[in-house]
Image (cartoon, rainbow, N blue to C red; front, side):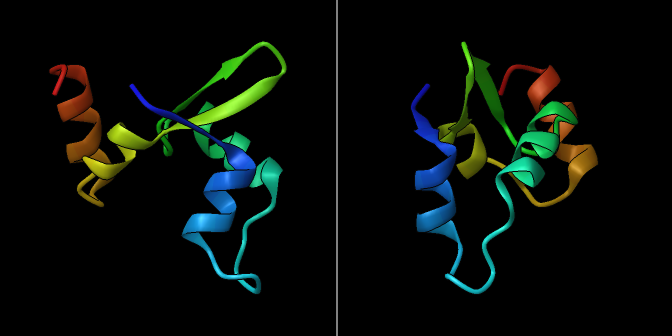
Length: 68
């Protein structure tokens, strides 16, 4: 599992004008919409799991439960 900080993820995946707020990304991690985890006080994105996402939330959750 490769982890990327939220700031680095925001800079590499969004343009300056479209970057979501840090709180939005944290909320998406907590709701399971974005693969990530909290380590101590910091949140990180699992970039390998994010790359495997299909774009369909139902399919993504089923595949995650199956250990894909």
